[in-house]
Amino acid sequence: MNDTATPHRIDLAIIGGGAAGALTALHLLRHATTPLKVQLFEPASTLAEGIAYATPAPQHLLNVPAGRMSALPDQPADFTAYLRQVDAFPQDDDATLAGRFVPRRHYAAYLRQRLAEAEQASSAQLQVVAQAVLSLRRHEGAARLELADGTVVDARQVVLACGNSVRPIPLAGADALPHESIAEAWDYDGVRLLAGDQAIGIIGSGLSMVDSVVALFAAGQTGVLHVFSRHALMPLPHAHGAPATYDPQPLLAMGLRARLRTLRRHAREAATHGIPWQSVMERIRPLGKALWQTLDEADQRRFLRHAVRHWDVHRHRIAEEVHVQLRDALADGRLQLHRVRLQGVVETDTGLRLTALSHGAAVQWDLGALVNATGVETRAEGLRNPLLRQLLAEGIARPGPHGLGLDSEAAGDRLIDADGTAHGAIGVLGSLRIGTLWESLAVPELRQQAEDAARHAVRQLEAAMP
Image 1: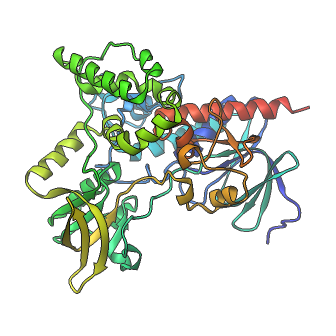
Image 2: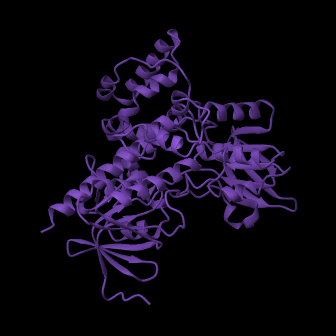
Image 3: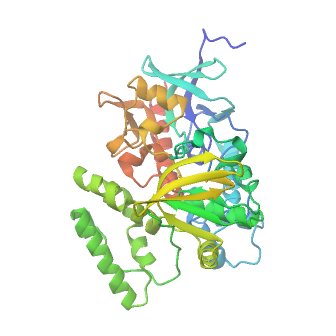
C-alpha cells in the first residue's frame, strides 16, 4: 500500500506517454545538464503510441513524408537515419526514402529508440510510471499530483501532454448498440474484426475514416462501405511538383475573406506554370500559428463556422497511393460517400438501421455495423480525461479560445487558469493548445512545442538549484 501522507518529490512530471509526452521526455533528456528527477506518467504498456501510432497495420501510413518527421528540429534527417539504421527500406536511395510515406508503426519505434539512447547519455533520470494522473492541484508553488493507485507526487514543474481524445459518435441511439456492432476508428483490432460481406457505415469523412477504409479492405471487406458526413469532403492527396515561390507574409495582414481570395489566386497562377495547388499550401505551412493568431475573433469564428472543413482537407493531406485506393473504391461503388445530417440508429433483427436527412428528405440504410471516425475531440466541454475535467471544474484551467482545448499563453506554453493567470509551473502542448495555436497536432508542430517546453522546464529547474 502506498503512503500518501509522504508525497514523492520530483523535478518534472510529464503527464502522457504518447508521441507528445515521448517527444517532451526526449528533449528534456537532451537539454538537461544536471541530475533532474523526471517521471513520465502513462498507464498504457507501450510508450510513444497514443491513438495515432498504436496501429500495427502496414497500410496505415504517415501523412507526412519521412524526410519531414524527425523528432529533432536541429537534425532534420534523423528519422530517415533511423530507418536506415533498422534497414527498413534498403531498396530506397536517400531522396526516395525522404519522400516516402512510411507505415506509422515505424514512428513509435523510432521515438522509443531515440528516448532510450537519450537516457543513456543524459544527466537527468527518467522513470516511466504506469499510472494515470487523476488530479493536479497547486501546492506550495509547485504541483501536487494524485495517481490512480492513491500515490501522491509533488512536482516542481509539470507538462500536460495528454494527447488526443476520441470524439463521441454524434448519433442518437448509438449508446444502446451492442458492443460487437460498433467500433472506434482508433480501435484498430475492433475495426478489422468488423470486416465481412455486410454493409458498414462510417461516421465522419476525415483522416480517421481513411484509416478505417484501408483497414477494412485489407481485412477482406466485401460489403459496401457507406461514409456519412455533413460536408462529404474527404482528405486530398499530396502531390509532387515544383515549389511555389510567392511571398506568404502579406496574408498575415489580411482578413479571412481576403486571405482565401489570395490563396485561390496563387493556386490559379501556380497552375499556369504546372505547379500543383499543394505547393501553394506548403508555402504557408510554417505560418500556421501566425495565420490563426492574426485573425480577429470574428474572423476566427467565421473560419470555424464556414471554412474549417475545407482547410482540413487541403492542409491535412494523405499519401497519393492511399488517395488512389479511395478514388478507385468510390468509382466501383465499394465506397459510397453521403452528405447527410444524421438522425439516429436502432438495432433490427438483421443488423442496424441508420436514419438521416439528405437534402431535406428522410433516408435510411440497413447496415451490419458502424465505425465512429469523427476524429479528435477538440471542445473543452467534450474532454473525457478525468484529469482535464478536474482541472476545468476547479478553475485550474479554463477552455481555450472558442471553447477549444485548454487556454494557454499565445507566446508560450503556460496553462492559464479561470482568473486569466498563467501557471509558471504547468506547461501544456499538443491538441490541448488548438484554440490558442490552431495548428497543434502534427509532428512538425509537436516536436517544436516539446522542445520549447523541455527547455523552459530545464531553465526553471536548474536556475533554482543551489
